[in-house]
Image (cartoon, rainbow, N blue to C red; front, side, top):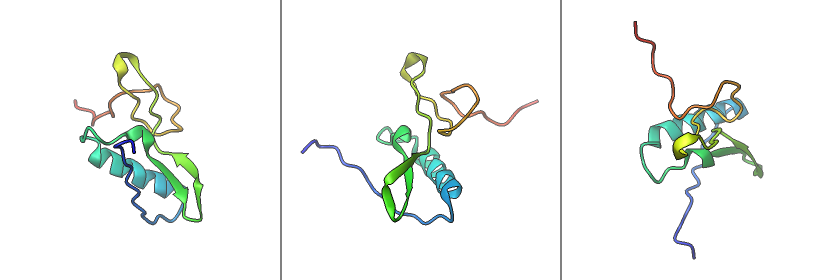
Length: 87
């Protein structure tokens, strides 16, 4: 036994895009916990659980942090989500 466990939390979504949005939202909501690995969040169809789709990019950045953008982003990686613009 490794002393490490993974929680599987089945939720229902209408399609893959909505499942990814829900996965990102759950990750952001729980991301303040040191035990949550955002880069490990995946989604799959109920009847094809071995085919997983990544939710976050999770590339390593300078300083050891990881990218927090969606897996298929086209903008440069970032370790923080952009906040609301302030003028």
